[in-house]
Image (cartoon, rainbow, N blue to C red; front, side, top):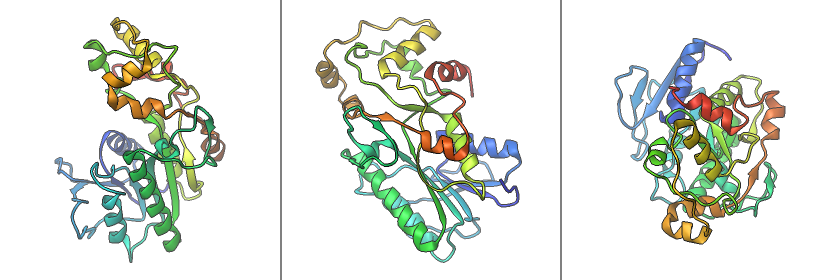
Length: 285
């Protein structure tokens, strides 16, 4: 990766801050855009929910876009405003972090990048709109583009420890479907590699090789922090009724295959199984 061409990070949340730290460790200059200022001179407050979006003085040649769509909108007007601001100064490379939710329910099938896009939830439909906007703009600009489809993200501070200590209820293992996830640090590592001038382009799934269910994941965390979970819920529909927010995640069943990015980058995630990722995350920053 060239160290004299700054990286623009749009959205300095959980992954964005980790990416910024990694770039600093590598000696690569970066600038971040986020809604609220945070006292870092590298970070500029920009409201992507207002027109026009000003990018004056911002280096836009290599962009990693991590900002989520607004939760009450159709499509992603936030991203589309940002893309309009890039007209006349298009990037050389644009990396967009999407979600494997764009595949919708695949009835438990193994899903690679050739699978049909069956987004059904409002959240997934917003991401699908964003993907299409990025690809259309990048192809018009003749810019390199990457859409990185991510499943559940975990890592330090993202193990649901507070909920587990408070008595998190989970469905019984025999009724809980397989899950998909990726460690934050593996996302950062993949993005760093995808920022290289000769890096591959296109859409990529990024997930670990283990399809551990959310129940088994919670139990693994609980065992390592010395907590016993309450008795599991045997009836999955009763669980959905008690926790409707989980229903959209667990009803959409798929097993994410990330062979394409592994082969393209000649790389594999550091935490290719959930247990190693959990153990590394406990006590991590």
